[in-house]
Amino acid sequence: MSTKEGMSFFDRFLSLWVAACIVAGIAIGKLLPIVPEVLGKFEYASVSIPIAILIWIMIFPMMLKIDFGSVVNAIKMPKGLTVTLTVNWLIKPFTMFGIAWLFFFVIFKAFIPGEMAKEYLAGAILLGAAPCTAMVFVWSHLTKGSPGYTLVQVAINDLVILVAYIPIVTFLLGVSGIAIPWNTLLLSVILFVVIPLVSASLTRRLVIKRKGMDYFENVFLRKFTGTTISGLLLTLIIIFSFQGDVILRSPFNILLIAVPLVIQTFLIFFIAYGWSYRWKLPHCIAAPASMIGASNFFELSVAVAIVLFGLESGATLATVVGVLVEVPVMLTLVRIANRTRNRFPE
Image (cartoon, rainbow, N blue to C red):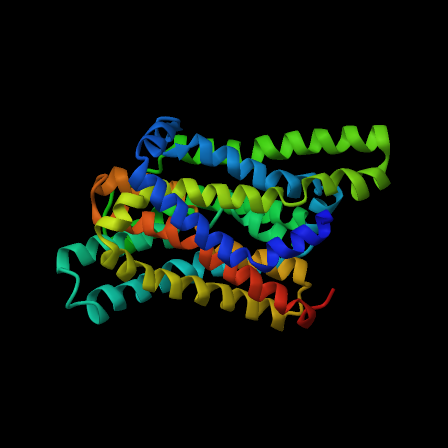
């Protein structure tokens, strides 16, 4: 079987592979707790080093495709950045607050005590105010998004987080004295943007210089076929092995928290995607512009939740549920984006 045929088969049953990896992760966490225990020791500033390495593996192929001419062109396309910034910072945090409040305090009132509802709401707010930094490279890659544009939007969102995250969270939570865990933010930017970008840029330049552009595009890049999906599936196994005990101990609460988070994710995606469609943005811009707001910077959210409310709090649990539901939900949105590609300009 050729690589192309193998990947076709692999992609066609990706949902089954994802489900299998989730089950495998939960089983490992329950039956072989030593595995997540050992992996959990390799952590700094609330960032899991094993997961960071896998994310690096996932996004490296996309970074290889970036030439800085495309970055300059991306900056010259303000409509895409307008969609990204408006949805991420003027819409997403407030719709997250509204949807989470409706479910935790009204629809699920009979199942969630008032104090716990407040903590769940706090966790949802922390997620809603932190757009994705690392995984958006993966979603953009899977939707054939513009690498240059994705890099620009991630860089700009990282800068906005520095000035907007604290005021928005403070306003929505009604608490003061919130401090960004700078070590988490800085480490995430270095691991998920700087290192893969620099290494991929040097690799790209070296290969093109020695072998030429034709070899780079038609031979070298093909060697990374399947790398992103493989890294993604391994990441799923590790994430769910870390949280397997939590899922099995309180599955109903996990489900209750997941409902508004999933609804919010779809809502934000379709707001940005629909806006991009009305503005007639090319699909390679529309897809990543919609994906970055739909997904979350969960490393930052979890770290802040632990600092503010404690490791065993409902707020921390809510941010962890955000981690658990993100990959399956975002893969669904990737499929939607790919199936509607022909409705957008090239």
